[in-house]
Each structure stands twice: as structure tokens, then as C-alpha cells.
Image 1 (tube, one colour):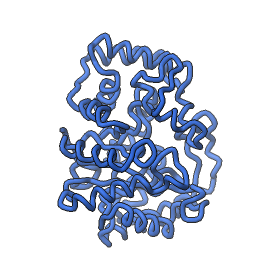
Image 2: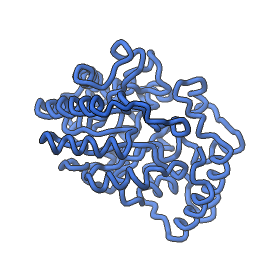
Image 3: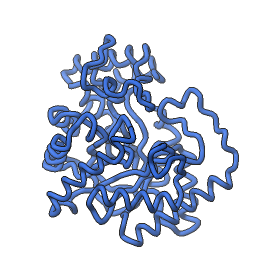
Amino acid sequence: MEYTTLGQTNIKISRICLGTMTWGTQNSESEGHAQMDYALDQGVNFWDTAEMYAVPPTAESYGSTETIIGTWLKKNKSRREEIVLATKISPEMPYIRGGGQNIDRKNILQAVEDSLSRLQTDYIDLYQLHWPSNRPTYHFDNAWTFTPKVTDKQAILANQLEILETLDQLIKDGKIRSYGLSDDSAWGITQYAVLAEKHKLKPMVSIQNEYSLLRRRDETDVAEACVLENVSYLPWSPLAMGVLSGKYLNNQKPGGTRFYHSEGSALRYGYRLTEEAEKATQSYVDIAKKHNLDPSQMAISFTLAQPFVASTIIGATSVDQLKTNIGAIDVKLSDEVLEEIHSVYRQYPIPF
């Protein structure tokens, strides 16, 4: 396994991060425990979850993933310090803290206590904001309709400062070690950095956004902001929710897969299954086959090859899938493969 430093901290994280959001719906507690056992044995010390999980999100599955991690930690107390554990506060879900909540001091404090209880731990290594709650976001499937409708900049900045002050206090209290963003923009990264410096607060150390062969929009402004502000970039869904494995080609929707389980979900994962995405995915799968590469490993390795990427968040619904995905750390793409990938990208730059 390879390791790097998390943002402006002394925390060492594996360059493969274990994503956990299927535990509690697609995966049982025992299956989640088996994945944690295997990942840690392979040197994957960085694990990511969220209070909202499992997915697709429902009132019934809310908190179940953290609970599964918590029962593992209870059984393996001596291994807690080996793990860099990340979770997130998720705003605006109708069944979380009464619904309609923003990310503010009151909700952060309650959310941290709730997560600590479910996780059965005394501290969280990386605490993240799942997405902005006081301004529109272009993430998920909002890019085609996004307009920056919120114009009260001072209100946004006041909320960001309240968030930073609250999280900074939680570090002093020993309940979290660092904090970061998720599904945010170059503007968001920069404003948090400016406010932290101005008010002498701990800075945001990371951001996790969707990034894959099929979604590369963060390679410009967001990547620049991360490099200049020393913010670790953490791609989520490097397989575009499994699309890049090739298993959904030719209109297939195998039973037990993410899209099979999420039909009708508010998260609308299926927006990735466009005609353009189908063509691009087929082209990427063909490149992998031509060079005797596993398509999933090629896609994950591509993200790890980017100079602004710190650690890539992988997910799996079986240990066999997990073995394949973690194994991508040992796959190094040749210049020829990268050139062929670039040719497909130029042909299908925004496939969904």
C-alpha cells in the first residue's frame, strides 16, 4: 500500500480509501466486518462513511453504516489507532434531526455526538460537510440546471465562519482531529481557506468530490484550489457507481447492483446511464482489454495517477470486488494507455 499526508496535518492515509455506504442495505453487518478485516490487512487504513448511510438513503437505513463500523470497532478496540476514520454531517434530509436543517453549530454538535455513539469511538479523524447547505451545488445531477441563485454572500460567509469555529472547538475538545469538505466547489474551498487564515482557525484539509474517467470537471479550478491551499483531493465513485466496470453495458442491470437497488431513490443514480456514457464506457473497457487490464483497476489507477489526487475512495459489495479495487494500487498505466484514454475523453468530455 502507498501512503500520503492528509492536507495540513500529520495524519498518514492510505492512497486507497475504503468506502462503506452499501453496508446496511446491499451488505450485511458480517459482510461489512469482512471488508474491514480484509482492507486493514492490506494496509488500507483510511475509511470513509457518513451519518446518512446506508444508501439508497431512507429513514430506516439512516445511521446503519456507522453502526456496523461501530460494532467492528467494539470487537477490535486495540486496532482503533491504526485507522483514519472519516464521516460526514448530511444536511437537509427530512428524517435527520427533524429535517430541514442547515449545517450550523447546533446541528454539527448534535451530529458529532450521534456519530461518535454509533461508531463506538471517542474521536473522529476526519469530519466532513457532506454538501453545502446554504447555497446551491452543481454536484450529483445538478450540473445541467445549476444557477448560483443565492446572492447573500455575507450570510454564506457568516455560516462558513460559524462552521469553522465550531469544528475548531471540536478539535480542541478532542472529538475530531481534522475536518474537510465534500461535494463543494473551488469557491467554497477558497473561502474556507481565507476565513480560517483570517481568524486563525484550523483549515479544511480535504475535499471529496465525484471524479472518474466519466466525470473530470474538477481537473481545472478545483484541482488548482486544492494544490494552492494544500487540500487533499479525495475522489469518490472512481467507477462512476460501477458503470466503468462495464457491467451495465448493453442496457444490463444485474440484480444486486447499485442501480438495481436504487431505482426510485431520491439520489437518482441512473442519470449516469446515458447514451454518451455507454459509448465512452465501451471505449474505456476496450482500452483495458487491449492492454490486458481489468477495467475497474484501470479506472481507479487513472484517478491515482493524477497529481492532485491524495486518496481514492473505493467501494465494493463483495470481498472479491474489494480485492480487485484495492489491487489497483499496484497498477501503473503506461503512456500509451493514458494517450488512448485522453483520446476517448476528447470525444466524450461530458457524457452525463
